[in-house]
Image 1 (cartoon, rainbow, N blue to C red):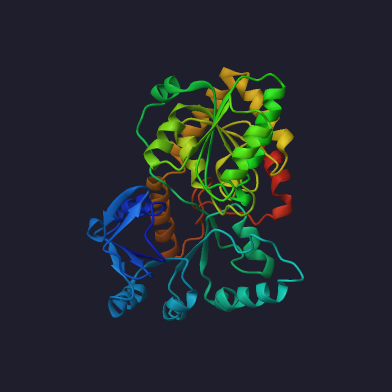
Image 2 (spheres, rainbow, N blue to C red):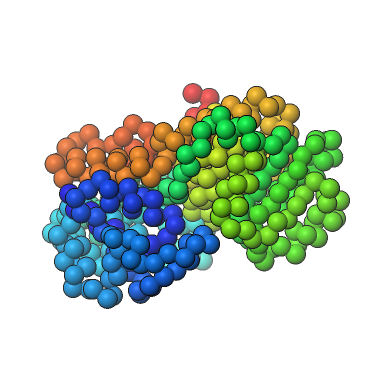
Length: 391
């Protein structure tokens, strides 16, 4: 089987998946649509283009790449317009579109004309060729079907960062009771200030904890001011930007991990990494990864985005129960180790591709990557997640 992945750039989120695909199939190529780079930085480490035997650059080898895109059994398209593979679509060869979301900011009267036109231009006019959609967000399928696109052809997907091999028992032994970790760029749509407000509520209740925020960004000064205003210097540390290995070390030690982003977070790989590190995760329901990765009350906890009181309540509950933290952390680790990792995703994608090429009917996995991504309206997602946790 020959699989070609055409995307804007080879990133740290794609490398583990690409490595797994390269080891599984006879021929695998990653074609970078952005211009050639001889070396670049990935999470603090410099890599060279020759480090990746499967890497090609579209604009340097256009004729070769166009031939690959037409000849491949399967083409995965990430961040590149379907027009680039129009010849392949016209030849009725499978294309899988890899996408986070269509409408992060919603559809309003102000943007409706642009949204409708853009959706038809980039997706709608190609639906007669029946491309498939790899949904790298729990909200992607619902977005897609607003205008009737990709109906019945939406697969649960995501990003699959590097996973660790540390034994669960060792991970749990390293956890420090009362530690809460937040990681990310300090941007308004990531809402780090919600975490500080929740921390004030926890302190007012008499909870004992140490909160560490890793990251930098435009809100850093505002957050420093909030720490002083709320008198939280004794329990909060703003650590600034740190290398990825430091992030993973902090996750290994933290007993609770909180992520507070709204719908602007298409996926959110910090959730994968925190679950892989055995943290008890508390996540805003609006993040794209949450509907796929987190089952409330089992392998993590979900709160309604923006509901800081609910966030503080869950934090207090976890701070007060070692058993609950350990159970959630162990289940979280199992979710990543057994299901949501690059190796499993690659194996399932290859299996799906074979069935698709053989015109089989039973294409979807039961759960996890390559299972059916049900279109759910954004406004209904939180209640659906709460309903599912009761089943």
